[in-house]
Length: 582
Image (tube, rainbow, N blue to C red):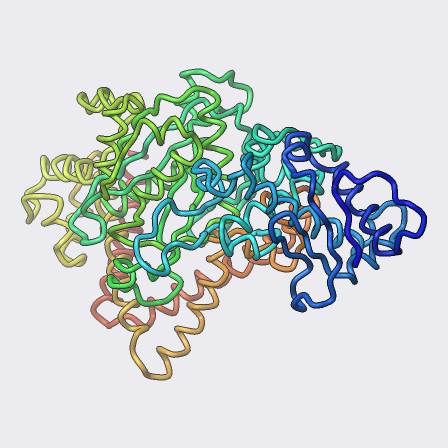
């Protein structure tokens, strides 16, 4: 039986091959450990080669005894001088470091896996709501799925990579920073990290994705972005998001960056509906994936104010530079790794946003002891803690002028209707009544309007077109649930497109089969580029074709209404040009 104390001097003559290999392996491991870790290990630690470990287990620790598979020692004994380029020798070294991490964690100076701050960064829930909901949702882009079995294995797996991987701090920056503060820097030379954060952002209405290299130094502020509720059951409580106030190139960070709306981005947790039937029950019980989307602010404004007719309030958060950078780093990590489950009550957009803020900056977690479930409740908690200032929302006109509020288009539609009605006896008393009229009833009024009224009618007819598309989507959703052959074929088309669109919700899916973990590095980003282009090309062709098929499949009344609205818009544009020329 070969054994070796951690601090044992050179072997006497007659030492076995196992003893020599164990001595070399322990010595190599000790040179890789941070000082605080090496000093915390017990002096009577022994390494015991074994032949009876389970096939999938390379090592196990019992007290001060580390049992290691003898085949790993043999691989180490025959390794070249540099074991980092020999997979078998690297496995022996990482196995021993993994077990030394368990020894550290269980010792009096350890307790890493019980640390609340580490659990937040790692993605372990603080409390289990009910059986099956205590798992770690940071599943994607993992260096080893074994880390997800429990917090102790998470610590051991990550300490392996913290010690051995030169680019660990680039891939998991928040965890690397925590380990360094607790244990000290690892002696392994470190890779210089790119200062920008890699993100995939939505672009356009057909699910296209674009690459965003986010420079944290260009982010002037982060706002709590609150979408007001409407009458829809799943939207009446509003929606919680974060707005990144990003300065345009060439502009020095400062208050004027709030004018650069085209550069601002939104972080939004949403339920990704990966089937063709939206189920309220699945949303309530956690059946849909909850993912972190990155979207242009202008697209978000259009979706909420123009299509859903909901106002948006942008409330600045009181964050220092360190807090902003911590939130951005945590968001990037979640963007590539998080695969949660949306639950309307217990894990909705407000809960997810709060957890992101809390996990990024523990001061926020200490200040906001929030236990509510609504976006408005989270805003109230942030205000109470002095982390959000919504006073500018009291004067909506000023807030809208300064970019802190984006009003629902409903008020604009009403104003345009009054403009059109001022010169004509329109057969309606409000914009809503006007849009409820059959489109052919609106047609004769187009040629009676003056220039100002015609411009107003254009905006109203565009609103009618958006509403018609929403009604068509609702019909199509119900139609896809039917059981005839035509519906089955359409379902397959939709599922294929949803699979491509899913990359916006799960960016890691685009890197399937590419080695790497955490934030993708330069070689992985290079591998991603052609996949991204191919996916975007499929969506560019697929969604318009499906929309055309869906439009042709609509019931005759809806199809005819759509055609009349298109004709109305063309007629209005012709009249506008003629009146302008006159």
